[in-house]
Amino acid sequence: MCGITGIVSNQSITHTLVNSLKGLQHRGQQAAGIGTMDGNLMHLKKYLGLVKEVITEYDMTYLKGNAGIGHVRYPTAGSANDPEQAHPFYVNSPFGIMLAHNGNLTNAHELRDDVLKKNHRHVRTYSDSEVLINVFAFELEQLTKHKSLDNDKIFRAITKLNERIRGGYAVVCLIANYGLVAFRDPNGIRPLALGKKEEGTEKTYLLASESCAIEVNSFEFIRDIDPGEAVVITLDGKFESRICHPKPSLNVCIFEYVYLSRPDSIIEKVSVQEARRNMGKYLAKTISGLNLDIDVVVPVPDTSRVVGIEVADRLGIPYREGFVKNHFAGRTFMLANHEQRLIAVRNKLSPIALEFKDKNVLLVDDSIVRGTTSKKIIDIVRKQGAKKVYIASAAPQVRYPNVYGIDMPTHNELIAHERSDEEIALAIGADKVIFQKLENLKQSITDVNPQLVNFDASCFDGKYITGDVNQDYLDSLFSVGWNEH
Image (cartoon, rainbow, N blue to C red; front, top):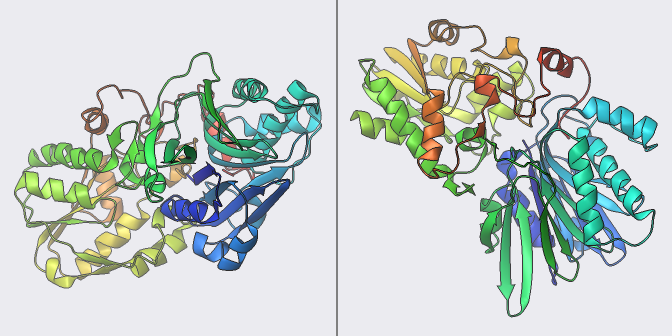
């Protein structure tokens, strides 16, 4: 996953872009970048690090303009420490274009060959996002032949692009001397939100991966961009949208609600906070039928806190905060290897012995993916004197890789792959592990918005909505250097 944002205004937009990116920092902590457009000039700054480290006060003095895009990066595979793969990407033909992308293209290898051999364009990295910007540029070139550009040609180019690319993607891009373009994949897997601010007769539009990054700037969150929808906002502030796919359908990534998104965000008319509260309700029902001797419920902060509170309340068991979290440490899910995650867990979470000593503890976490973090946390809790340690997951067993922009690794790295719950408990050192049922996870979201019934839940059920993912594809992902932008 990554975070993207874009804006067009009649005023300077740099600080708004930076604020939006900081609001999306939880979606990517490996690299950050901003591109702006000021008259005929396009400015770009990107590098490895957090937003506050990459975009300095000095940078803001030259990142001028009335239109801009931004990106925070979380790589799913490949070279995590290559600054060349930070966003935005840039091409200068047939027009100056800067692009930022959240998601993953499942046919990136095939597209790269087409871009190089058939479209006669050049790429410098193995990023699927660089392939994407070149496909978009090529389709624009075919429609304009280096002549004048208009909205209709842009929408037609995105329609052609949607015919060529597969996967989950949300995109923002700047076209020199024209404006901001944004679009979302036809399956609606990756989110994209639209906001607006009105001052007199002037309207300013802001797009972001989550509504929280819109509202932090005092913009009004309007709606989600629809699956297959593209929007064009010209430099004079005119807004137009169009569906650029014949058969769009909404299949939002269910992991957005479990872990990826901030609790103050709203995705497809569903409050993430309310969905997580419902996850706790259904998880408590599952736990209540097991007759476990539980003295205290302790969440693994922060994402699972609201789930843990609901579980404790429903079970009538005391809720306790058992860990002090270092908020300057990153999200361990995002780290690249086993050793880094082990070190990060201990640096991030400090136990409060009082809450564990001589107690049967139910830990509540958002998900169990590799099991590395869970095993370390359980070991920490046992060393604080806990008699028994149970762990409950707000999500079902993660048995399959995610190929649409989340780092769900190869089968053999997933703790739940070809293991029973009892075997998982043994592997991570728990007395018992309890997982959410998939139907209950879906229901926790549908309870809030009954119209939201289809999801990308491929990491749980192995059903890949794009229809082009098989075992050969999954095996090939990790034998080459491709990565999510």
